[in-house]
Length: 409
Ligand code: FAD
Image (cartoon, rainbow, N blue to C red):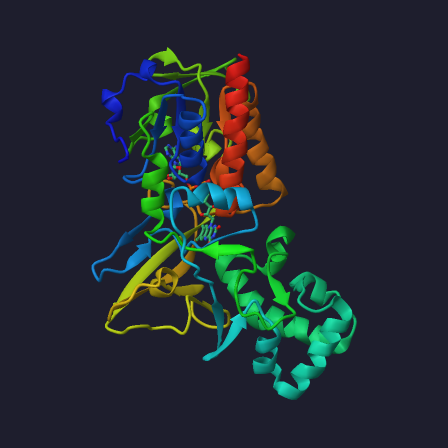
C-alpha cells in the first residue's frame, strides 16, 4: 500500500503507540516491525521533504536514477537482513567495481594482483605476489597497516606504493586530516587484496533494489498502522523534560503536543542536535555532490573511479553502472569532502571517530540512558559508520527488544 503521509499539525498524538524519528533504514525498519509484529500505531517524523534517509534516489532530468546522498550499493553476508529487505524489493545482481585513477591510468581498487601488474610491471609483480601469498596466504585481504609493518624491503615497497598512490591523498581529501590523525579503525578499512577478483565487495550477496531505494522505502513504510510526517524536526516537536537544572541532568520525559509520551521512541538522528548542542557539536565530515550529464552511453569504465593522486574531488560515480539502466545519456557525480560546519545547510555524513569525540558522544548518550522508552539507533544516533545491512539487522533486533519490553510492561 501507499505511504500514509500527514501534516504533523493535524496529528493527535494519543492516536499513536510509538514514535520513530527518521526514515532511513534504522527508522523505517523499526517502524515497520513495531507496526507489523507488535500491532503498534507508529508515527514517523522526518525532517527532510522525503523518506529513505541517505538512500534516497530519484530520476534526474535525463531520466537517470541518481542517488542524492552518495552512491549506495547493498552488500551483505547477513542472510536475515537480506531476506528481510527482499520482502520489499527485487534485487539486481550488480557487482560494484572501483578503479583508481593513477595519473590517468586506471587500476583496480582495492589494490590487488591486477593493480600490482599495472603499478610494477608483470615480472616484478609476479615476484611480489609470490611473497605476499607466502606471507599472508592467497585470496586474503591485508590492511595498509599490516603491510607497512612488514620488514621485507619488497613488501615495504608495495606498502609504500599503496600508501602513497592509493591511500594518502585520498584519505587527506576525505578527512581533511593527515593520515596519522585518522582513527586506526578507518585506516584498517583500506585493504590490499591478494586476489584477481576486481569486485569492490566480496560479500555473499550484493545488488541494487531493482526499482530503486525510494521505492523500497515506500514499500517498507506503506503500512496501515504507519503515518509519516515529512518536514518535521524532532527538536521542534519534542519538549524535553530533565531531572534537574544542571547541564548533565538526565532526560526524564519527552512531551509531544503537551503530553508526556510514554510509548517507545526510536530516535535515529544525531543526539547533539536533539540537545541543541549543549556540550558542543559532534564533529562530522560532510560532502558536496556535483552532477553532470553527458550525451554518451557511458562516461566511465566502471561504477566508481577514485582520484587517489590528483583532483580535489575524491571520486566520481556513474549511476547507470549501478542501476543498469540503458539510454543514450548518462549522469555522473563528483564527490567533494567538506568540513561539517553548519547543521542548517549541511548533512553530517561521516562521524569523525576518536577518543575526544567518543567521550563527547558518551556525555550526550548519558542524558538519555535513564529514559527507558528512548531508543537511539542507527549511524547518527550511535555516532558510528554503519553499512546498510548492519543498520537493518540492528533495527530488527532493537524492535524485537522493544516489543518484548512493551509486552512485559
Ligand atoms: P540515515 O540514512 O542518515 O537516516 C536518518 C534519517 O533521520 C534521515 O532521513 C534524516 O533526515 C532523519 N533525521 C535526522 N535527524 C532528525 C531529526 N532531528 N528530526 C527528524 N528527522 C531526523 N552503506 C552501504 O551498505 N553501502 C554503501 O554503498 C554505502 N554508501 C555510503 C555512501 C556515503 C557517502 C555514506 C555517507 C554512507 C554510505 N553507506 C553505505 C552507509 C549508509 O548510508 C548508512 O548505513 C545508512 O544511511 C544508515 O541508515 P540510518 O537510518 O541510520 O541513517
